[in-house]
Length: 364
View 1: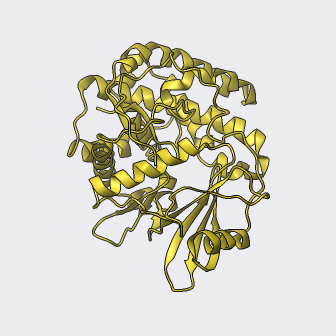
View 2 (view 1 turned 135 degrees about the vertical axis):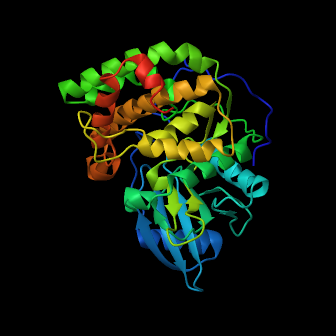
């Protein structure tokens, strides 16, 4: 594990050259592991035998491992484009939360037979790939539930508690340039070429213009390491339990950025999927309940509250750009990659139908 650093600083939107979206494995193809391959890895690296079931994922191989003794685990085998530093950041953040806030439902990182938490796979058929093993969390992903069954207030509470737990965490790689960090939206401008619809391209152009107006305020935001991907696929729920949120998974986008960006990402992921920008629907209805839960545990300044709707718009635009590009690169995984992109165009249209001031107060 790396030795934590004490670096800090304000979020920057221009000082980082984002060679990315080529970073973090977003453009790197690889041969998928089979369930038999996955069990071979757990047997050799962790001493665990059993059966494997694949999960759909964005950029790596992830399996549920049903061990012969009845225990369950999650095996993740990294994309070849992910660096050792990125993987250590993720693992270190999860291990920090397990100590700082053991009540939070974050998977536990389990060591290999040799005591490693990130294990390079030496097999020639899987070059530059590493394995991690996590405890398995029972429940269903939030995106499998009807919106009426979702306790948005509790999601906000858990997000705030996770942020507070990560506030003291430091890592040498926390300031990495990440395509999914909304402060880098302007760096994704070249990806417009991969959006075939002219109307959609026009919406993206407007989003870039809108984002430029908030960049000065964003640079003044308070920052820390955050989860940065509090989306429907990464929240595990147990509707029949006293605690609705049973798991927070996938720390793959962990980064040091504005706290407001982390909240905006969670807000955006509560936008209704069945949405018509011209209809009477309230885009922020469910998000306001999430915000109420968040504010019960952690404060946000007036400036942050005004920025969050604009940052939610930036995340919608970034998702459209990155997923359209990646669907072109990986057509075999298009359905998974674009699962939230199509309704996102109506969300973006809603924003562009309203002036800056109206958007600023949309969440309040």
